[in-house]
Image (cartoon, rainbow, N blue to C red; front, side):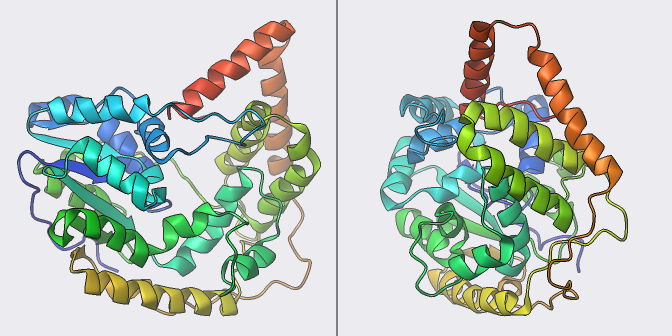
Length: 381
């Protein structure tokens, strides 16, 4: 492992830097640092538009995605949300940076609309990527927070099947077909307007430093605001608890209730605890890692042939990974008492927060939370 990526040249002084993810590459931490650095960035001639941590609302607006479950409380922001951000970005002199990993889910039509809105003369796309084998467990766990009920290995067999039909977690390959993703934006903007940052086998400061170099600001501007709050993966037992809870509850809840009680309550409470050294972690079988490596080689070839600027070790995307020791079938480990208490405590606090409210009051709270979620501003717990 190296501490930093190779030095990245600064973008042109009037560029709009569109950071499109991908998911699970440090996007949330980077966005938090950018948001906290708005004033310092502005003094350096760099705008991070808006007042929120990230630009998720504009991204979901641009790609036409619903936040949450369509038909059960999920909401899609109007196209005007992206248009407003695009106008704001174009009106800013100097460098501008926009960041949301939701942008990486754009299809060809949506990507063209995004470029047209921001202006092809100023837009430069930046995408950070990691090897697929390392993304698999964290991606499945992320889908658990949206109500996924499929067990991990069955999910792996489904999405890694050469005949995968796209019905299960369809966003996974929109995000993680890295070769196709990079080619899409390179075809729109030209390869000289796309930069790929490979964040495998680099230190935790590397993404912050590389983005600061592209914006031509001191790295300390972002590093000093780096959020070191752990965003760890769940243990095998914690994951199974959430999966079974989804099977029990998800179909009977609206999206707003699920988001409050399960996503923002149970899941967040589990991830705030520190698991013991002996608690089994999620196991990715060797066959899945091998399949991911083969997919990674396809991505390496496509990215290399696209001619875009690559910063970091592109071959890391295809490097074989070795599976951790296999757990005996059915062995998850008992859920520790502190994990059970975290779950129960989250529910008690949630219920206490709405106790005594009228039905109309609770409905207004749920609607308000959904509105903020669509805008990308749902508070962290």
